[in-house]
Length: 152
Image 1 (tube, rainbow, N blue to C red):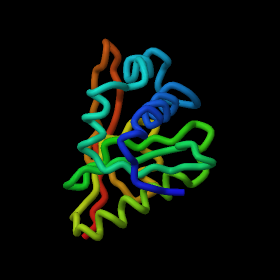
Image 2: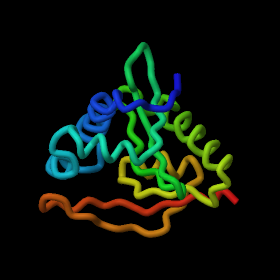
Image 3: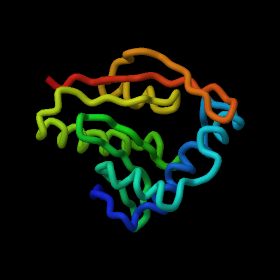
C-alpha cells in the first residue's frame, strides 16, 4: 500500500533510512556508511526536515518498508527501501507515484543526488547522470551523482 506520510511516521521513516544505509549490500565501506548516517535521525531537526517534503510511504502489514520524498521543483531528497524489500519493485512503485504527481504539477524534470546504492534504481527509471561528485562526511569521502529525468 502507498500513502502520503503523516508527522507521526517520522520515527519509523528514520529507522527505514538507517537500515537502508547501514544494513545489506553496499558499495560503501562500513566506515563510509557510519559517516553518512552515524545514527537514525530524530527529534526536531528530523521532523523539520520531513515537514518541508512530501513523503510517499510504502507499507506492508502495517510496517513502513520504504519511502521517497519530493520537494517543489522536483527534487527527490530521500529515497530508501528496507534491505529485505530491495529488488522487489518497491522503488519503482514509489517512483512512479512521485513522477505522476510531478507530471500533474507540470514539473519540467525530477532530479536528485543519488548515492552509489541508488544510482542503478534511478537509471532504471530513466534518470541520466548530470555529473559525478564526492561529498566528505566525518572524514570519509562518499561518491554520488547528480541525476535528472526530463518530464517534458
